[in-house]
Length: 253
Image 1 (tube, rainbow, N blue to C red):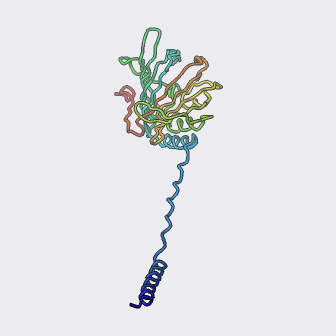
Image 2 (cartoon, rainbow, N blue to C red):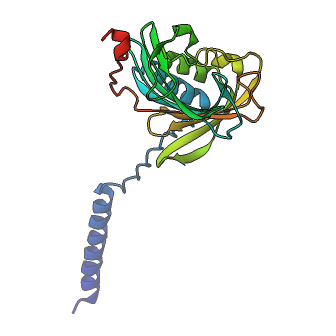
Image 3 (cartoon, rainbow, N blue to C red):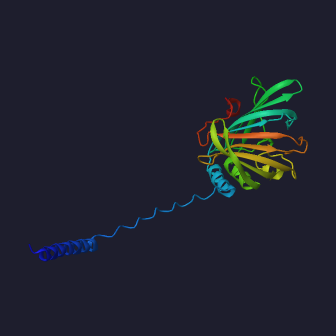
C-alpha cells in the first residue's frame, strides 16, 4: 500500500474542508448589534404655576356651581350682626343669579336666613315663615355675580403658593397647596371685607382635572374677626344647570 499517497489524499481533503468552512464563515451575516432601548422622556414636575393656570381656567369657564362656607372654629364671625355659622348657595348665570341659605345665631336663638337675587333684584327673609322683603343689591354680603372670574382672580392672587402633598377629601384624590393672601383680595367675593389683613390659605384641587374643591382661609377678613377665624369654602357641581327664580311676591302674584 502506498501510505504517502493516502496521507497526501487525506491531507488534501482536510485542507479543502477547512477552506470551505472558512469561506462559509466569511460569507455569513455578522452578529447584529443590539438596538438600545429608547430613553423615556421624563414627565415635567408639576408646579404651583401650572396648577394655578389650570384651576383658574376651569373657574373662569364656570357657568354655575354650588358654594358653601362654614366658620370651622366657631370663632364668632358676624353676619348682619349675628354670629355666622355657615351658608350654602346655588349660583347661576345668564342672568346672574343666586339662592343662598345662611345659618346664624341671633340673640333669640338659631335662625336661617334665605336670600334670592336675579339680575339686579334681591330679596331676603329671616325665617321659613317670614315674608320676603326687598334687599338692595349692594347690601347682599356675598358677590356671586361673575363668581368664576372672581374665584379665578383669587387663585391668581395667592402668594408663596407651594404644593404640599396629596390628600383625600370626601373620597376624592386632591392636591393640597399652601399659600398667602391679603384680605383686600377677597373684596370681590365678600363685599364688606376689611383691608390690610394677612391671611393664610389652603387649597385642595382635584388631582384629575385641577378643579378647585375646597379653600380654607385663616385670619381676619373683617376688622372684628378673631385672628384664629377659619373659614372653609367648598365648590362643587361645576356647570350643572340651575333654575333660580325670584319669589312670588317679587313677581307680583
